[in-house]
Length: 116
Image (cartoon, rainbow, N blue to C red; front, side):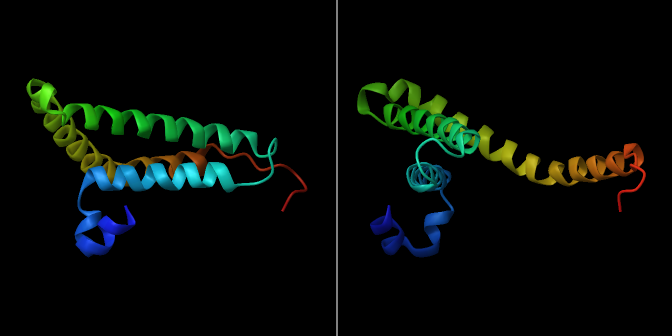
């Protein structure tokens, strides 16, 4: 991945597949190097789930590009188009989610007496 980044420069970050691989590498590195064994179990469990999901996405991508799976390559392209559209929508929609979450937090928050 480092060689691919050095060759292509900032174009490396345009590809969704490269971003998935980079997120997989980062999550596995954090999982391996974060804290002593047996501590931070909740965070390690979340990182493990993320790494597992991303590795399966990568496996499906690799199988889809194999020449014997040429019939399924269309589905892989469709998956990436839908994923790209969904992530664009989610990026804009997250502002609404944050706005409503903060509004309801302020509306439904109850102050405890004596706590400042």
